[in-house]
Image (cartoon, rainbow, N blue to C red; front, side):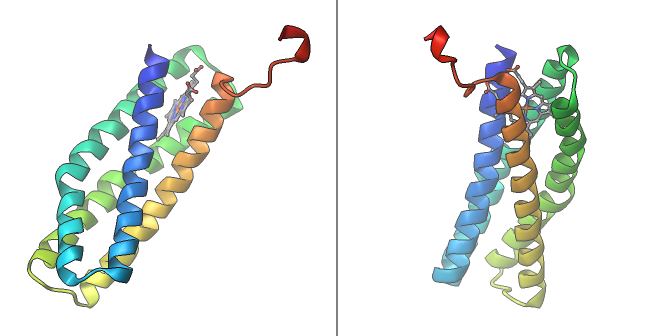
Length: 152
Ligand code: HEM
């Protein structure tokens, strides 16, 4: 059961950040300022209210699972988690709040695009770290391990 909860929370957290990232890039490239403001507000609500519990649940269930596991893969996952959490709490959340406030006020100035760039960078870093945690998690769970022909 904790494995299932960890899998669902981990995938949800990763998909949420991927959705923030993709919708931001697409609306910045092809959308009006009004559309950018809508996306920015959806990222804050409901976005952050999905992301924060999902990251907390992933970290909590991961550390719980790791009590009975040892080795290089689990150590690497443990080391990445504080960066993922700090990046989320200290960079992504404040960026999302400022960008939403500025977009609603129609302030698309240098500050807006600087913070937007920072948010995309932090999102890309987190997606990479989360992708590595998924890769190592799937290796540990053996979900896609090949079944030897003799056992078929
Ligand atoms: C955002 C961060 C993380 C993501 C996206 C993530 C994702 C995943 C995924 C997709 C699996 C495979 C589950 C399955 O195939 O059933 C997994 C397994 C696992 N994860 Fe994480 N994980 C994260 C953080 C952590 C942390 C911080 C720890 C603890 C140190 C951890 C410990 C584990 C363990 C022990 C397993 C193997 C569970 C089993 O034996 O089935 N994970 N993780």
